[in-house]
Image 1 (tube, rainbow over the protein chains, first blue to last red):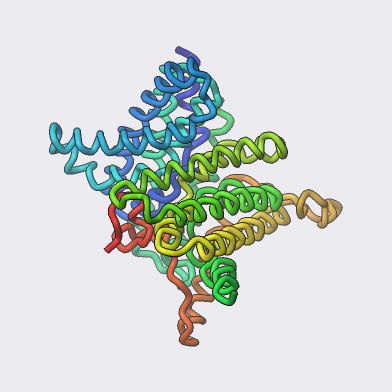
Image 2 (cartoon, helix red, strand yellow):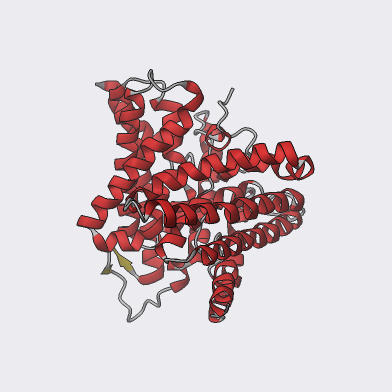
Length: 191
Length: 231
């Protein structure tokens, strides 16, 4: 239990997926203009990463390890993730239209989100069990959710600021990310 | 021969993936803690890019349109796996430093982006040169950022101390995570100035086309995320 908690805090806050591992930078910069869309994207990422880390852990433990084909992990994981995202999209469209309405547009964007593959590979490198893998996946995605929501909140305020011309747009967002990253470094003493 | 040189020039200068197109930002931020890491990452991406372009261009008439994205992903993932093994065998130190970012070359938007926008429409030889050009452009970008961060953060270039620690206090934050965002922010700002100057001269630069433009609707690479062909 203690180990799970440490994994969760470590992945969500201390080693934040965006601000210290640089995974999932694309949606972090691209879909963080408004808080609602940011929260939608964050929700979709939590959903997909949690399922993906469960499925990839299962596949690694029960298919790749027994057949001694661990070297195929990158190929298998990326295909599984791509297929999984399609299935999740179809499933939500059919059975939970309300959830699909809010997450649907972001789901296809997640296939090439490096955070999903990154978490699956980290679970394998750190030799996490299936439960630990799922906890790590959920916590990592939650860290993404926190980061993108804070960023969207700040960007809504920045809209009204007087920014030097060359820094308008992406540059000021990156400076904001830099300051957020410095703030998150403060958590590194926690574990 | 001229059009091959043109491809190289296009990749390294005119449409440089790091400075002009702003593609592949995840590795750009993550592995540029030193010039050596940047160079290693750039070269391994180049190898994958060249062979991916070669194979995709060679198979472009066989791969059915509906499943081209999964097909590209399988090709790229296989190449990345091979590169990873080669690096683990011959440059184990670098492989450890780059860690999870080597397998993550699979989802680097430069590779699928070139596959989609160039290799799937052009013959094999130009595609190979396109891959070399783009890959070297990416390598140059990563190495430059790595050099800047290494000088400011440690006073070194490629591990050699060039600024004496007697008078230079390393700004350690530049080799840590926030430094990556800061250097990239100033790079983007500098490119905005260059862009404005070139626009005024009447020779506009190519638009940034990746996620960094923050505009998914008009993104040329959106086919990779959504699997739908850009109209």
